[in-house]
Length: 290
Ligand code: R5P
Image (cartoon, rainbow, N blue to C red; front, side, top):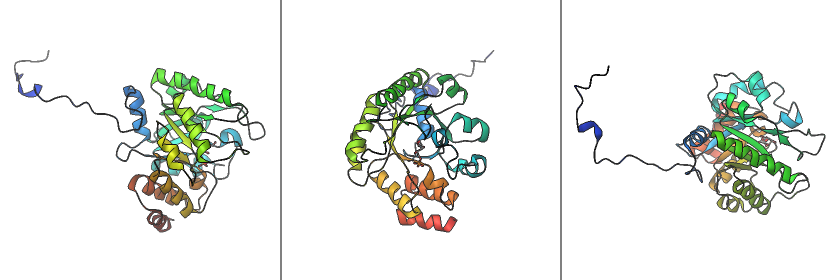
C-alpha cells in the first residue's frame, strides 16, 4: 500500500498556478478532440506547423507508375525522411516495414482505373481496418464539377463521420478533370466545399495567380500536390511559393520519386517547408546531396 506519511501538504499542489490550457497550433483545428489533434500533430510538425507528405498512392488507379514499380526498393529508403507516407493499404501491408516512424495517410477511396471515368469512386477502406493499420488520416478524392461529383462528396462525408467517431482526420484531395480549368476560382470552390463538409485538411494544386486567396478562404490547412515531374529547381520554387502563400505543406509524389536523386530532393523539399529555405538554397542542398 502506498505510504502517505511523507506527503507534503502544499508545495506539490502548486496552488495559485493556473493549469496550462493551450490552444492548438493548426488552422481550424482548435476544437477537435484529443485523438484527432494527436493524429494531426503526427502529420503536421508542431514546431513548424507544416508537413512533408510523401505521396505514393498513384497505383490505386494507374498501376505501376514510373518510379513506383518497386515500392520496396524505391520508396522504403525515403520513408524515414518523410513526415507522412500517403499510400494504399495494399502497398502498406506488403512493402512498408511496420517499424516505420512516419504517420500513415491511408488512401480510402478508389474504384475506377485510368481506363474508366475516374470520378466514379467508392469508399475503399473500412474505418476498422484503418484503425488496425494505425492510420493517422484517411484520404479521399473529391471531384467537384466531375461527372460523379455528388458521389465523391458523399464518400467524403461518410469518411468524415467514420473518422470523427474514432478521432481520425480526413484529407480531401481535390481532383480536377482533364477538361476543367485549374485556376484559383476553381480551387477556392473545391477546397471550401471540402472544408465546409468536414474535411480536416485539403490537398489541392498550386496555381501561379491567386493561390493566396485559395488558402485564405479555406478554414482548414491546405497542402499542395506536386503534380507532374518538373525540373528540381522549379518544383522547389513551387513549394516555396505555396508555403509563402499560406499552404501548410506539400503532399508530393512524382517530383520526389521521379527525381534523379530522390533522397536529395526530399531533403531539399524539407528545407523549404520546415526550414524556410529559399529555392536556390534548397537547390544548392539538392546538388550537394545528389
Ligand atoms: C493522385 O491521385 C494521388 O492522390 C497523388 O497522391 C497526388 O497526385 C500527389 O502526387 P503527385 O505529387 O505525384 O501529384
